Image (cartoon, rainbow, N blue to C red; front, top):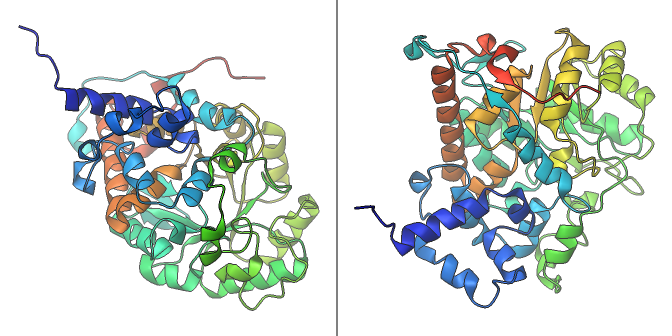
Length: 418
């Protein structure tokens, strides 16, 4: 006799199906989507009772399990800011959908007991090629924000990028991590402010900076504007006006004269990047390159690395996923500098696919914010544990014992060349 699933199990499977959708995520998660859909007449309560939302990190089977748990705890305005893309959120969805177009080509009968996920990046060995992307304002999701994330990264041997718009100073984050973070830079609109920021980062011992270049003129975050609360008086306790627009509220700009200075620089060009390259003594990445033409220029201008990124679908509505942009950048670079990628990674198989297409390391953003918002450090730790576990499993099943062995021969892709 065929087993009929319980109503509780059926509801959970339905929720997991919805949670896996970037479209649903763009509306602020399952509950918010249901409120705005034809199912709004009480369906949210019926479809998502509290008993079907995880109550502890150990209950999570995949990273999607953290989304609704976080949504129920994080302030609505903060949640709306995090989940939003730009325009129609189509690039946000494309980032996720792109991985569904890449198929695995496993090799069999290879000893899976010898799988080693460790990678060396500029002299430091990490437990896996997974890294934490720079995302702003972690205290909007958990009281000790970036420090909680850093402690989880330390426990899991994970590289952490820190955002210029962090809600905790780099010095405290480094202390929690046990080593200096890599640092993401939004170049301020004056060189003087940029230089002072870089001096602070240098004094903190950060070995790598990544200049973000994909969002210099602002963005049209429609979903955020439509789904945030209409009454923003509650926001006054955290910040003035829109999030991260008042430089005096960002710890990394303490002591820097930001009067009349903006965190985004619409005049940013290769000459400004050259000036930063000349000033900065450590390794210098650019974050936000998506084409072979700009990859070629990055080599010409002496960059030490590239992070293929479209800001998690939060920059320009290109409709092109980063996993599709990755191969042409890798091909142009030709192994001369490392290429990283982020955007849409939710599974260990996604990490494997990106590595097969030439990425040296693979970043996540929203998944660890879900973990942070749901359970703080313990949530981030479990997100990392799940993804590292999934990557180890797929490496074993596909016959790759080392990260360096994962090549394009392990995947089949559409014709993405232009």
